[in-house]
Image 1: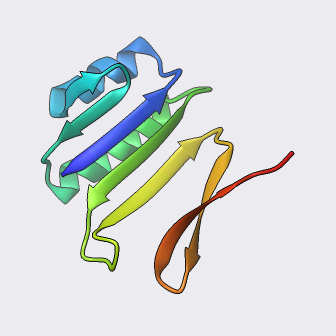
Image 2: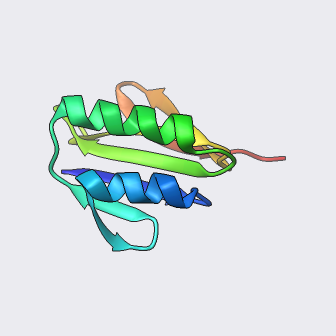
Length: 92
């Protein structure tokens, strides 16, 4: 399972995501795609994102059962703690 969440994304990017994934809610896309397609989708997201932000979550053979990538301007950042991916809220 793959989930992509975008905020403030251009319409062209949102249209591209619907080629591969189902938009279940505004800016939330889900589907079952290969790792090759997932990497292609993520490259497209990061290149066309502009001033928006995006999160990619997919099933993975990790302790948590999933992996995460983020792009764009987020108030949150990912960090690894003994093999677990955690989220830290940035303070200004």
